[in-house]
Image (cartoon, rainbow over all chains, first blue to last red; front, side, top):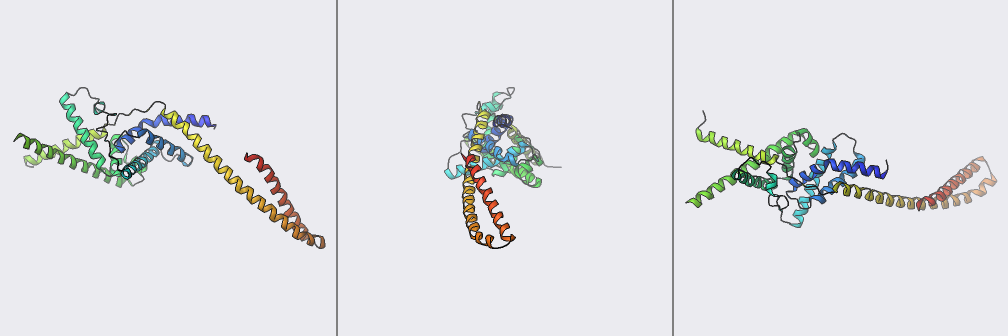
Length: 190
Length: 118
C-alpha cells in the first residue's frame, strides 16, 4: 500500500473513533485542557501498535486501553507538576448547560441536576484511576464487563469489584455531602 | 416488616444511586477540532520514515565496516596460504579458492551497497 493510501485509511480510522477518544479522555482526565494533544498521543500510539495488531481485539477496545494509559500518564504528569486540576464541572469550554439536553425539565430541576452533576464529576476525580476508568467505560461508554476486562487487562471479577467499589465510594461521598448541606441549611435557618 | 424510617432511608439510597448512574451515563459533549484526523494522519508517516532512514543508514555503516574488515582478513589469509598451495595438494587449493570466492562476493556486495546508501 502506498503512503498516501495508508494515510487515507488511517485518517478514516481516526475519524471513526475521534469522538469516542475525546469523550473518554475528557471524562477520565476531568478536564478539556490538553485533550487534543492527548488524543493525538492516543492515535499515534495506536499507529505504532498497528503492525503488531492481529485483530484479536476490536480497534475500539485497543483504543480504550491506550486512552486509559494516556489519561493515567496525564494524571502522573499533573501530580509531578503539582498543577491544580480545572474540573470539567468548572470548565468554561464545556459549560454544564451544554450537558443538559433535556429542555422539558423546569429551571429548578435543571439547576438541581446541574449541581448534582458537578458534585458527581468532582467525586469521580477523587476515585482511583482504575475505579474511574471502569465507571466511565461501563456507564458512559456502555462497554460490557468482558470488553472492559480486555481493555484494562484484568479479570472480569476484578472489573466487577472495581465497579461496585467505585459506585459505593461515590454513593457514600454524595450521601455525606447531602447530610452536610442539610446540616448547613438547618444551621442557617436557626 | 421494616420500620418506616429504614424504608425511607433505603428509598433515598435507591434514588441517590439512580441519580448517580444518570449523571455518569451523561457523556460530555466534545468538540473535535476541525481537521484533527487529517493532522494526525499527516504526522504519522513523517515519524515512520525518519525512523526507517536512521536505522537503515546506521545498519549500512556497520555492515560496511564489517565487510571491509572481512576483506582485509581474507586478503591476509590468502597471502599466508599462497606458498602452501604452490607446494602441495588439493586441500589447500580448495581452501584458497573458497577464500577467493568469499573475497569476490564481499567486494561485489561492498561495491553495490555503496550505491544504495546515498
